[in-house]
Image (cartoon, rainbow, N blue to C red; front, side, top):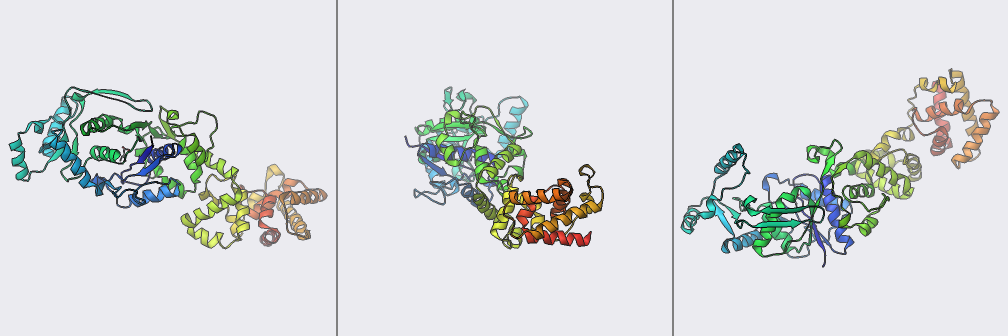
Length: 492
Ligand code: GLU
């Protein structure tokens, strides 16, 4: 069997994390089996339609390297991949059901349906359509149609039959048709409902595996009835377990927090994000946690999907991202960082990063990559690398614990550093080299390491929490370090 999976979002918002997980698993399964991964846009609910959402969705999938084999931007067949452009197809299929007496016109107004629902709720009965129009005579139907009465089309659910299905993950459902609502297939606006469009498209597009969120489990018996009405074989259903936010609440309760774009904007590496998302509902049955996309593809098996829900935890995502930042080669990270900065912090990119040279930026990033969790922390933690405006607070140079009790000690330390740097004949070559030179010089001056290196660190970075003095000197270089120390001495 040639596997065909699809990601079928409704364009109602940004791509959010639970869609990303669904999309990723569809992608991984198709790639693992050498099958095809399709994008179909389910935009039949016009009241929730958001115009920019489709473009945004496609753009995000491209950024995440989830390459679509077939979809709106790379059609394979002549047909459209947007459901709103497939209305003729649904009309044809619903007509077939009408002709075969498997569906019927329903002329009930929304007022009547509301009233019915309220009555059922008051009596604690399941809310369903009472089948009033199912038994209209042909003449009655004809008359109403000729009078232009608005109508929907409903599925005729066979009486007293058992609908069964077993999905790949854990669901085993058996339900009597008397408990299934006679669902609307076509709405009064001529648009199909989700159920009809979804089933018709999955069949026509030859989808073999429907991998979707657990939320759709209650709809699946309806879909199975529809496949039966058309005489089609249903695909395999794979329902992914719940995904909750850190506070154990539903993700839909969070707004911007769940938009994938937010994580890209904050500068998480796509590889780390994908790696983390893959583990929110699947596990490789080993203790290994770091997987590249290729490794995910190679290892992804439906039988390893988790049965219980998962929690989206930003701390764990940070952990993944840090792992990648530490492990990756600096040149690769630098390339990703610059590409990120150009888009998401263009001012900083143009006015600071491009003005400094690549090697300098790279050495700053090398120093920082084990300390930051994501790219958007870079700017804040590196002001002192890119600006020479001394803002030093001399108070933090004094430090009881380090026995730096007066400004004389501070000045001695800074002077010693200045002299040592000025006597260096070459540029600083490595941290080890300058370490040896400084340890020697400090010893000769009968001072303590701290007494010199602490004030120097503060002088070069204006912060208590920053890279160490020797690392700073190495990155800044001899001239810049001398310059900063001299300016500071003048201001002390
Ligand atoms: N349009 C549905 C959604 O956005 C897709 C459900 C399905 O995959 O069948 O959740």
